Length: 241
Image (cartoon, rainbow, N blue to C red):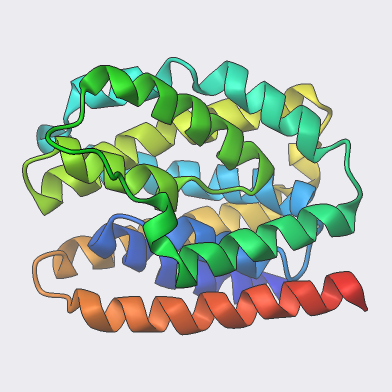
């Protein structure tokens, strides 16, 4: 049953990520967190999303803004080690509550994660964005809602934004997986779920690539809001009951 749910969710979230450039990873994480502890769901999601983002990066490689990518990638690994150390040292329900609150904040207060600077964003500011991305990816499992606004500020088109965000997330997920592996996470125990999810996101990415220039982003945002809210509330209920 879990495998079926994760497979379907992976196809749908892979499509969402390919079309909108974000949202798929955090939605998939919220689904996985219904079945696994957050510190298990996060590395499983990382393995699945790595495949999704590699596929999207390959598909859109000519549109990637590489100066933005390497600046965010450099600080991700040390930040991921710090994040994993924190995530694995607090009670499971505390991590579940933190994830649920993050999901609700992303859904209902997206302005908290937006770039508010005046004028253009300095590329060197992306070193700090990368550090924050590495930390968020390994504590609450997703950083796209935070990093997306910075990538929009340094890319010239929606396609370039999607491509650049995907390439940066490849580095983020690799860093997260290394950090969790160092902390003792057993990837072999969950390889079946990761393989099903990876296949689903690959299919979803291909579907999303065909819809990239035709999808209605407002409708996607409404669906994204409803789904994430329901998943976040279920996590809170599970944590307190």
